[in-house]
Image (tube, rainbow, N blue to C red; front, side, top):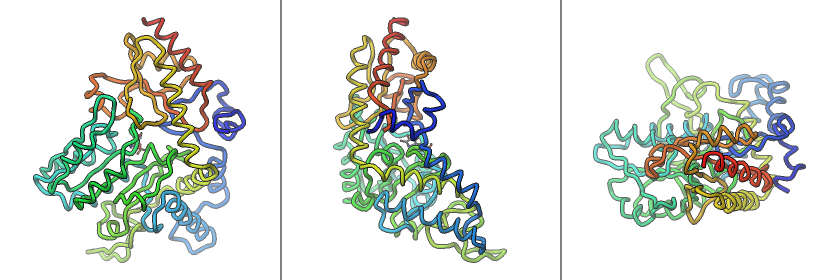
Length: 402
Ligand SMILES: Cc1ncc(COP(=O)(O)O)c(C=O)c1O
């Protein structure tokens, strides 16, 4: 069903670009008609600001906005919708935790752990917090295949560790990290842990309550929803205990010229007019995904990745970066004689959209001693025929440069 012409009809981009081979879903996914219609419908028929007006339209907009919060909670298995904070994306969610949760409790000589495969979004906020407080950012090593070294992780976890932040699925290597085990190990030492779910939430069943992570983050645009909307899940106790780091309208309880008290979580973290239409769109995106079995999505995307790897490896002088045991439908590769940007440019001329660059993982590129990779990433609208076309084109490029 996934990847068939009928299935693809739900995504209007493919009607407007009939020959487009879109292999860049790790950057952002294409949007189904239901999501686009949902957002348009909101602006055309339901638009009003939330939490403010008493009139009918405002009440309905508020109700819809808040009902999506419950939908998100159910989607990722949160116990309560008050554990769901709307942000502008994964990046903003991680920054919120770094500022509001970590900074006040971080002291000189403390340690924060991230892995060697983090996206800059899950590296820089912790790096900056450590710099500000004279703490140390420790890196959980990986092997050349792209497997996280869980034994080293266990060794590095110590009384000094104030926070662990780990990517669930690497956007560059496709590695699926053993987050359940990592969460358990951190908790054995009472260390809080954040999981960056930017690449996993669209394709993998997520249950934050079973996982027991302290924080979980994801972006709407990577799960068929709009840009500019994301989610921070935080355990209720954490969200209640920490202070907001952005201040303004809608997040207060009382205000005088001299002082202010704040609304309970999650409102206290949502200062100002938020991306209301984005939230509405996210709700439709979750409805869209909920039509399918998430395990079937995961299997489909993983199999596309395996198929692409198998076919690409038949090309001479092509190396795949990211060969972890447990991985998904993202394939990073380099050609011996052609720069990734040249490869992507040539593929672009054939209307194949891949990404070339460091994928916001520059230290990881340094680890591999390369400046960039080509990355093809798959979603449910892709199919094997597209991969065959990609492989044929890469073969041609290799022959040209070789
Ligand atoms: C693993 C990972 N983390 C974080 C992000 C940042 O997401 P956003 O740019 O939507 O905030 C990305 C985006 O590519 C990602 O792949």
